[in-house]
Every structure is written in C-alpha cells, then in structure tokens.
Length: 483
Length: 100
Image 1 (cartoon, chains in turn blue, red):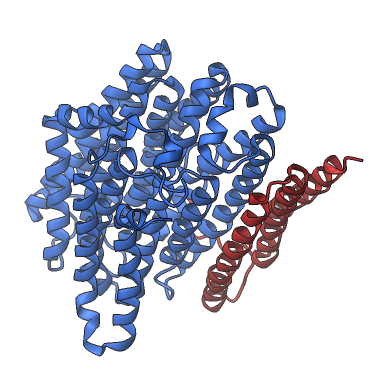
Image 2: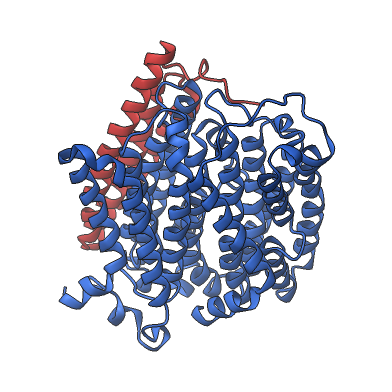
C-alpha cells in the first residue's frame, strides 16, 4: 500500500471517517445531536461532489486493472465506480433530508439512524468499487446489516419489527447462497480477484462447478434486487419499514446490488455462452415485469404498490443484462439513476404527508389532494408520469435506452413484453393521479405542517427527474464513455 | 488420495440441511441457526478448496465470513428480541400482519 492509495480512496475515507466522527459527537457532546443530520448531509453531499468531479480524472481504460487497483488491486478508482459513488451519496443525501423531519414526526429521533445510514452507504461504495470477491461480500453485508437494523428502526411499531425480521431472515438466507456460490467460483477459478476470474472465463464456463457457483451467486443477487422469483420479501419490507428507510433501500440499495451484478456478469456473459445467461436473465426480466405490474394493480397501500412497481423496474433493468451489449449496460446505469430519483421523490412525498398513525399510506387517502396540497399533488403526478414511462421525464428515456439495447441485440420480443408491461403499469400509476385530481376528499382536515427539508428533497429529485428527461444525452454520453 | 470430493459432498449435505431447515422450521431462532449452518457449509467448501489448491485466500475469506456472521447474529437476535417484546412470540407463522 502506498500513500496515493489513501488519497485515491478519499470518498470511502470521508464516509468512513464520518461514521466515526458522528459516533464520537453522539457520545461526548450533549448539544451535538442537533447538528448530526446536517453533518451527515454535508458528508454525503461532499463525497458525491468529489466523486462526480473525479470520474474522468484518470484514464481508466488505458492501464491494466491489476496495476491500477488500489490496496493491492482490491479496489478500483474512477470511472464507473465513481459514477456509482455519486449516485449512492447524492441519493442518500436526499434520503437524509427526507428522514430529518420524518423521524421527529414518528417520534423516533435517535442519531443511530444517521450512523447506520452512513455505514450502509460505505457498504454500497465498497460493492461498486470492488475488484475482489471478498470486497463484494464485505460491502454487501455491511449494506444489508445496516438495512436490517434500519428496517426495524421503529422498535415499538409491530409493522416495523415484522419488516425487519422478514428482511433479516430472507436476506441472510440469500447471503448463504451467495457465499456458497463464491466458494465454487473460488475453487474453480483458483483466485478471488475478479481480474483473474475474468481472464479465464472462456475456459471456466465449460466447468459445471463454476456454472453452479455463478448460478448461486445470481440467486443471491436476484434476491437483493428483488426480481422474481426472489421478490417475496420486497412488498412486506417496503410497506413495514419507516418510509424514510424504504426510500433509501428501494433506491440506492437496489442500485448497489445492480452495480455488483454489472461487475460480474457483464464480463462473464461477454466471454461465456451468451445464450445461457441471456435466456436466464430474459426469464427473470419477463416474470418480474409482468408479475410486478399486475400485482401492483390490486394494492391498496401506496408503499406496497411502489414495492411491486420496483419489482417491475428490476425486471426492466434485467432486460439490459439479457441484451449483453454495451448499450444495455449504459441503459441499466441510466435507468438506475432515473429510478433512484423518481422513487426518492415518490417516497419523499409520502414521508411528508404521512402522519404518525399511518394516514396517507392508503391510496384512498390521496383523494382530493390536488386542492389541498397543490404543489405536492403536482409533484407526485409528475413522478407518477415519470415512473410509468411517459415522456418527457427521466423514466421514459430509461426505458427507451433499455428497449433499444434489447432490439439491437435481437431480443425484440423482450422489448415488446417490456412495452406491454409499461402499458399495464400506467393503470396503477395514473390511478393515484386520478384520485388526487378527480375525486373529492372525505376528510377535509388540514394536513400537518409540511417539513422544509422534506420539501427540499422532493424539489431536488423532481428537478433531476425533469432534467434527465429533457436532456438525457449528457448523462448517457457520460455513462457510455465509462464502459 | 484426493479427499476434495468428500469434503464437497459433506458441505453440500450441510448446505441443503440448512436450506430445508429454513424452509420447514417455524421458530425464528431455529431458522436463523439453519442459516448459520448454510454459512458454515460455505466455509467448509472454502477451506477444502483452499487446502486442495494450496491457495490461502480461501481460508482468509472464512475469517471474514465468521466476522460478518457474528455481526449478523448481533443484529438478528436484537430484531428477534424486539419482536418478542411486542408480540410475545418468535413463531414466524404468527408474524403475519403484512400481506395483501
């Protein structure tokens, strides 16, 4: 290890140091609790800013990865990893804004929330930057364990407890598959370094033990992205967890799991028998899209509806994996960015309106919101349009790039199923809009005071959703340059 | 004599015992123990491969898995205790408010 490694690993060190700093402030300064949310927010924002402006600092493609990795090749620097660092940190900064007043509202304001949040972000960054199976495992577990604890954060609330228990049991079950898969990958590739595994993929794909390992690995990560057939935890966990936590794990948590899949499968699929992985991902994609869209129609709880819609979104992104071409990968990353900010906006608005007793969690409660809260209703309507993929918002171009990649690789039928599923999904997204604008509210009581920071979070996500919708070219060019 | 296949068979047996335990047992603590059995079977596979290949990194990974499993146990048991305080049960069939 050299000193330059520490310098290049700056984003990780800032977040890691932030965790320790906040722990100390929490312990030793009585008045310090008030500044902890603000401190967390600025740590995340600073890291996001630093990561964004170091994406192109070094020519990533020009050097062999083994020479270029930090800490003896365990971590990568710049490029795609820093793009993901930016996404995780910026998304979590918005989640902190959502959480700040929400936690006061539900009367569970402890500073552990921010420590766990930062710790989960550090885990995500380790996943996105890893060059070694050990790092993927450590990062994934750091993220997941923090999420288990966050899901059960309202410890007096039985729903939150139940969500935490389900998430924990099923999450560690999936981890078991993941590690067992890693054991086989290690045994056949004889190395933990991704670069060594990639260099011999063309030989290894003929080895059944290696394929079992990859399959088990895929099962573990299909669980983490909540795609069918390993989706069953998502609706329960998203509904039961505190809304600010759902906002975090439904967005950046899913992006982190996808960044790991991109690390492994892109290069395995490139060299291996394309048909095996491609058809596997196609099945997962079709099932997730259709199941998510159809099951969402029947939902009465808005968080549960968004959970099913997130299963469908995982399906759309899996199309990009099935396409196995660079534009598919670029499409996935674009979709992840769009998806993150759309869902942060949606959950942010729910967190703003939700009361301690759970009002505004049922879709029925949104009746007549258009006259009672014109700005929030308009924002939610825009986000629902974006989620259902109506132009000119970010969601449309996410789907456009993914479907384009599928058509380019000859999987036109996948794109058609995707379009069909988007058409189904319009029904349940627009139902919320119809309730807000064309139904009268049964209950005319004033809504609680709207939090300022929460409003800022909604505005920030809304601006990004519209900006990426109006000017998708700049982002897709940035992403394509990194692949 | 190459003993690797025997180690792999034993660990596969442990792994599937764990999977079946997770699927069939109803007490949250026992489900959690079955998950730990799955992790340990993966550890056994790692150590077997590591010894067979003469590559130490597999054994190092096992230490990481053990440390992470300990952290997971700490969080998991805390979750089970908090649900027990609220519901006076650790039976996962009775923990079923969230469904459609």
